[in-house]
Image (tube, rainbow, N blue to C red; front, side):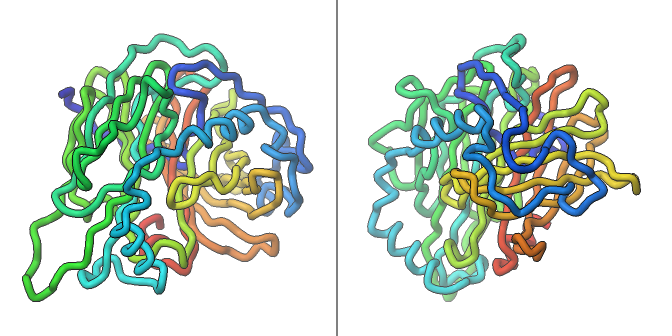
Length: 373
């Protein structure tokens, strides 16, 4: 297995580019109600309005996302397993403390791997095909595969039947793009009179990269590792939760493009629910206002263009300027904050493309929102 070195700060609304080994072109022309090319970083929400937009913002890039969405279902039979449905029903009845051993605990892990910093404008540059076929398992609990991210079937696929309920295997190869998985890990309640258990360890093994993670450490995780040969990278992003549906939460991912001036740019991407279903789209700009603050503004819409909310916050580049992080809030049409969002971004030197990946959570889930802030 190749050793990896941790790459500081990455991602924030990540990954919604074209298929694993296919080429795509991103159109950035303005077609909706608001003018995204001439936003004012000094105005509230950059001057955007609480208006509806054309479906997909009128951009071909988002239409590609819609086509990909139906291909990301997994067919994992454990999604309908009686124990899985029972534990999920328990978590949906009332909010719970994820550290309460008498309740089931849920860990959601989103893993993406390949050319995360790929180019977006047709020129894919040089790349080396990578084999990410492998397995994921936990010492105890049930692993449910919720999404197969950008797998190009039938070559890329989930291995069925599953070896057991704690293990999932897959076949995946990446070229100029990336693949990934979203898994739900359910730990049944334990008897506290038995004393503390050993840490529950997640084992991740592929032909290109392997690691072990304590499930405790996945709460609030958003880490990207670069292969030692720098031919690719892998991102781990997760939640650890006590409830599932009462307080909405989920993931963000998409394109993070730098302007020619280098002091800002545009972002656009997916707004996913906790189980990986596409709930909407987000688009906006980031830059520097007259006070010298690094800010971003954007709008979140439904898949058909209905206004869902504003996003606003601050971004901060890393030491090398190519990687950084962002943190902000999302607001309703009356400019009232509803929740928090944050993550990391990256763009490779001399490439117009880039990506962000992150998480969002409504304020009613203190644990989830706190892990982002």
